[in-house]
Image (tube, rainbow, N blue to C red):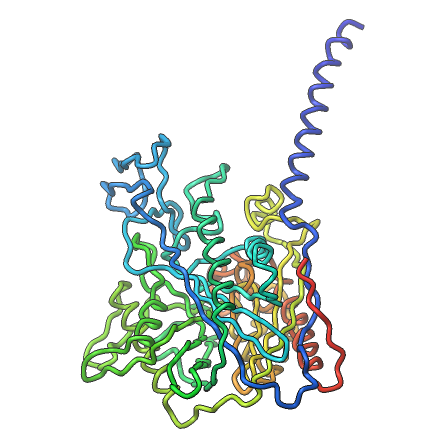
Length: 538
């Protein structure tokens, strides 16, 4: 009897601890904006035969962290990572008593920033016509989770009557960790919330200013098909399929021809600097944008277009990368293979030359249809990756757990004769342009699932597939190419890279199917007799 009485306090304490743990886990799993959802299409007043001139506005904000307000380490070990056991030290500028640097996202854990090569940006372009106001935002970031973008949408001035905002990360691997993956921690969340607040304010300000800057514009568009395998990128995983379409739009002021903005989209990892780099940079997109805006000197140079250049990341899963690629100088007189700023510069400037030549070439068309329309759909994706599941349940990565699923989003956008489909991760190009295989040895034999190719069902004269849009969920791998169990496809002795950074084999089929459905809804809404739905942002 006495022993039973002694056990009661222990049992009561255990029960309390279990309840506290349950409440804490429930709170972490709930995530922010639990009931947020979008599920609609908006083509505005599509009954108007001549919708009038498109209005366009742009704005940008510098999101480069001020390294003077962070700790800087002394790399005694020469490893480009903070290793105090090997003698690395730091200056405690923050006064926190611990090492608080800017941790870079991508490649390796434990990679603190030591300098700045070029500024990081939030760049926004707003469109308005036929009663629809839409903004597209490009962010120099390795990736950002969906809840952060919901917060930006909710923080916008409602008086501006913005119907929808699409966000995309350029995926540079030399910018601050904005996902909490690479910040030198194991169980403790040390995401730089100060930087995330800076990023949030910059997004809100850029979106609002772009809308306030709306003014009539003329639009010129084109696309350039080229072989990225020749000095631009490498597909590091079979089958060899690239994003071969460089999609381009140029917006000018009527009468003067002055450039307001140039929009470029094509798929390649901004990682020409590799994992040894500790200097902040947007990688090759910096040199691409800069050269399009300002031009290039010398006999192999060009006159820039002026205005603001905005890059939206294309299909880069697979893994499409500049690593181990011999990149020529635009003159053809030299080349560089080693990963470096020189390589990033060569790559960006070569893309700029192609961009400007194409927009000044014979295949450029002037936009006539000028209507703005979009469709947006909240989706839920099954998480089969064990580590991602644990991180999601604990609220460390991609906050918000829906009983084995996470919430994300797809968009389909129409700007006149240009159509854009957005996906929330890194899409394998074979899903977008065709070439999905079912190799012997992969885990799910049978016919390819992700058919037809997404771009074949898009109806623009130029069709863009923007990656890392409104979220960052990792690689989107064709199901029949999924390969984690032996024997391995294509004669490999070990699993290919990709699956470890994917939430599961069902991701691609779900995104493919729902993308096709969303495109159908957008196309139906653009028909003259369609019923128009409104987008609910709450």
